[in-house]
Image 1 (cartoon, rainbow, N blue to C red):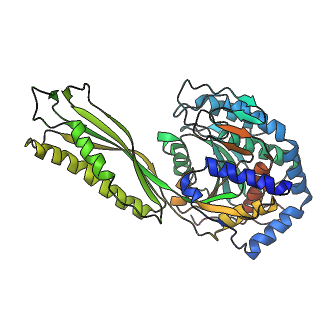
Image 2: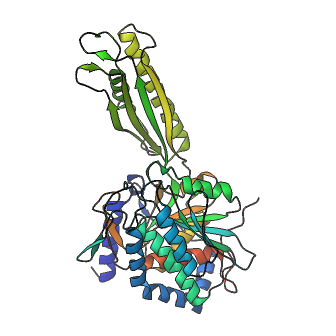
Length: 444
């Protein structure tokens, strides 16, 4: 195997180790590239300024890794991203974005204006991590690997965006469309995509969206795995296990629900899944439980299938309370409360849409031949569900252990990530005097 083949094998291993199962179900494919997309890339790749920008990114590799390490070591637990956001805004300001700001939701936004004739393209990475406050985020180097919680999810994406900005500055490339560089909050856990949801709520003029999340540049996420998460709580009278025997139990009701939920069958295509991820309840081994709680997660690549599954599961949750009350002839004593705690919309786009083609063609310029194209749960969920063209690309390098304390990153050919991103940006936004934007302006 030649050195390029070896690098590709390493990329595939890292991809398999770190990406959601929903994405892994996709098969390697290479969509047909349309004539307009191919023509645009030929013009862009032949432009001396673009060649210089690509070289600048490769030369910037060590600095980009330094950014990645420094940003990773700023804690950004769920709902507490403010310190990292302030630092990210400061770094963007130092790169010439005097108006870079933190919006009311906590997102960092910096706008690079085009020539005024093009679309608005957002390129983003998320500021938050899944790790709780107090987690040790100090980066530790072992051999060629850098270990730290969040080192690549999404420390790499944040650093890659800064590298792209430096290359654009160094070469003074002017785009046709406006390019927004954004650090979002709330991508992980119960953040529920709050940052990107606020971005599209507050800025209806956005025409397209790229999210940098994950590493591999042979991965093009063009569909959204939706999720619905619920906290289902049971409450009853409780009592002593002997003296009050005959009273309905909150934990028994919960158990009835879990048992029946576990028997629900879901389609394999579109992939639809569920799990009762957490359970709580009771106060003592010799007490009839007065309270119990389930954490239910449901996911699907189809909004319709997700809605069907939700209907089934919530009906089971309600029936379980009735069945427990009926068992002890105590109607209405155990009650159920159902609270939505997470809502990530599902959605799809055609594999031949412009975002997917651009994601693939940019990777081909990096030497990639086979691509994993499919669904995952990322910031792109929101625009895809809104019908706005969007794609999620990798930030470069290899890594593993995503969402685990042993998360690691190795900068093997890592510059290819920001190079890939730069080409996608230039193709979609257009290069003044070289190419017109492939991303169309949406009808307002």
